[in-house]
Length: 116
Length: 111
Image (cartoon, rainbow over all chains, first blue to last red; front, side, top):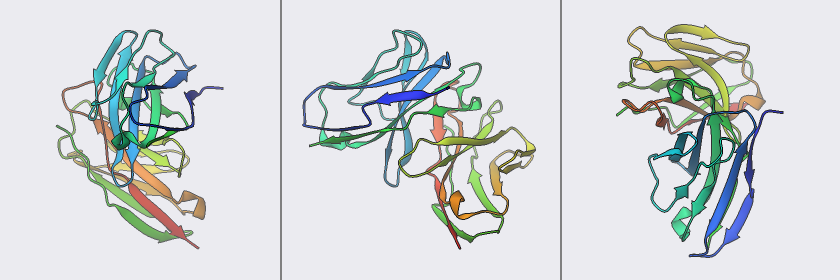
C-alpha cells in the first residue's frame, strides 16, 4: 500500500531535549516536505527536499533541521525544542517531476508534538 | 510572491451544491491549482487539480476563469461526511519547489 509513515504519532517532551520525527515513503517519490499546522494558520511549509541531499527552507524553518540521505526518508530534527514548536506536524511526498505544486501531495497521518 | 485567499468558513445543508472560491492573484503561468480536503487529526487528501476552464472528477468540479486569478471548487449534493477543511494550493512564484497553501475553508454541512 502506498503510504507516508510518520513516527511518533504523539510526543510530549521538555524544552531543550533534542528530538527527531521520522518520515518514510514507499512510493519512490523525489519530493518530500514538512509542514506544521496551528489553529487558524493552516499549513505552513517548514522544509522541503527535491531529491537526495537537496533540501531548502520553506516559510517557517527557524528551529528545525532536516536531512535527506536516502530517497525514502526525510526526518525532521528539533535540536533544542521550545514551547512555540508545539504543533501538529505533517510530512508529505510527491512525484517531484516538474513543478512541485502540480504534483498531488501524499500526506502522513501527522505527529502531535507538545513541548513543555 | 503568490498568495491565496479563501473564506474562513461556510455552512450548507445536505443535498445542496457547495462552491468554495480561492483567490490567487499572482499565480505563475506554469502553475496548476490543486484542492485538498482535511478531516480533523488527518493529513490533507487530494481532491482535484486543474489549469484552466473546468475539470470534473467523481467527487468535485473545479472552475478556473480565463485570467486564472481565482478558482472555485464545487461539491455537488454534499453530505454530512463532506464536513471538513478545504485548502487550495499553488506554487510560490519563481520557485519550482516551494508551496503556498491557503488558510483553508472550514465547511460545515448540516442535516
